[in-house]
Length: 179
Image (cartoon, rainbow, N blue to C red; front, side):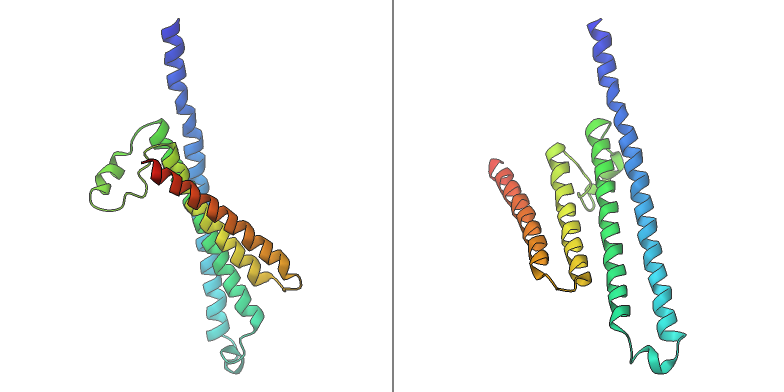
C-alpha cells in the first residue's frame, strides 16, 4: 500500500506540465502581441513620415505622436519582458519537476547558461531579475504618461521600485555569502 501511494505521489508531479504548457502558450501569445504592436507602430511611423504632407511630416512631429511612439515601444518591451518571465518560469518548472532539458545542457557548453535552472531558489532569482526590469519599464511608462500635477505619486512609485530592488539586492547578497 505504501509503495502504491509513493508511486502515485511521485507521478503526481506531472501535473506541473499544465503550468509549463500554459506558461509557454502565454509566452508565445505575448511575443506575438508585442511584435504586432511594433509592426503596427512601424506602419504608423512610415505613414507619418513617407505618406503624409511633406511640410508637416518631419518638421512638425507633434509631442503627442512622439509620446505615442515611445509609449508603444515601452509597452512592447514590457510585453517582451513578461513573455520572457513566462518562458523562464515554464523551463524552470519543467527542469525542477519533470526532467533536465538535454538540449540546454549541450548548448550551455558552447554558450549561455541563462536557462539552466538548478533549484527553486535559482528559478526565483532569475524571475526576480526580470520582474524588476518589468517594474522599471512600468515606472518609465507611468512617467511618460504623467502630467506631473502631483509629482509625489511618481516619487512614491520610484521609491517602491527602489525598495524592491534593494530587497532583491540584499536577498542575492545573503545567498552569495552563504556559498
